[in-house]
Image (cartoon, rainbow, N blue to C red; front, side, top):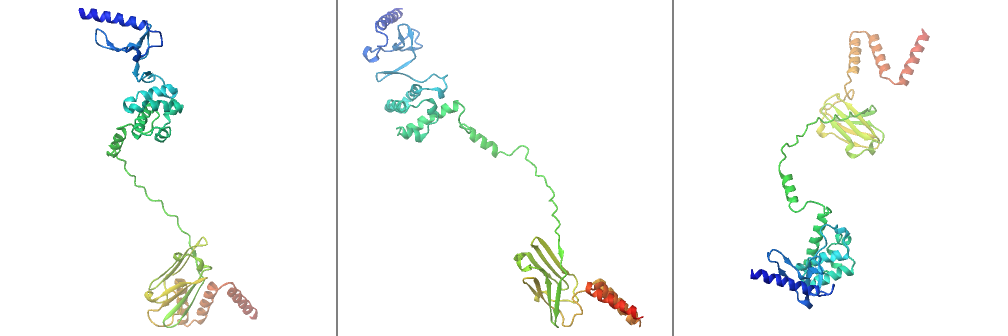
Length: 340
């Protein structure tokens, strides 16, 4: 009971002292007013928070100046003025220590308001005078917190990145199945047959020429020659946008491909083919139609019917001959008819 009375008298005395001080002249050093506890002992009331019946924001008495600890929590940091920023700097005094006052002055001198503060980085902090790397880190942590609260940060927060990576490394519950699709059919190439050829021979070898204009201008790997024991094939790919081919599927006789060779000249492909056995060839290759005609002509001569054999020969010349040959044969036939 005595303790309660003492606290009551103490409160009355303190109120009388405070009320006797003119408004705005309260100074912690001059009056040495210390905090006291209520009877309940549940909250601390600063003696500087009661002036002529008005309740002021909580003040931190340090170094003879009264500065609010931080801006209002419900105020958008982008709308802070320079004083609001200085209050935020003051709230970091436990980390900045004795340099806090100089940092506040530094932010004031550079007119750092909330909008500028949000865009600060390590280099900008150093450029305005914050030389300590550790203090810049503390300041950037505070700025990052403000930006995070505003939804201005990019990327995952702490722990979210590791969780996302773990989720990606885990096998999917239903892995995708690759669909096998049939390859698209290749476009059929068009080949132009080559019929202009020439050849010479002796007992051992045959010189064979396939004439193709400007074949010497073709790429090195565009010309291919395939020689077998009984056949020859020449292919020229993409010569001025066209493909050329020449085939002799059945030669007159067997050759030795391992000893044969070929080369490309300006307007022709030249081959040297070695015969498997010496001798003279009647023709370069076997033509089934010509072979059939020749067989009929030989049969006619063997049957002692020269006229039939001559007629077969004339038919062969007419069918195999060019326009000039056919014109000559037509004139000879007309002259023979006139003499009758």
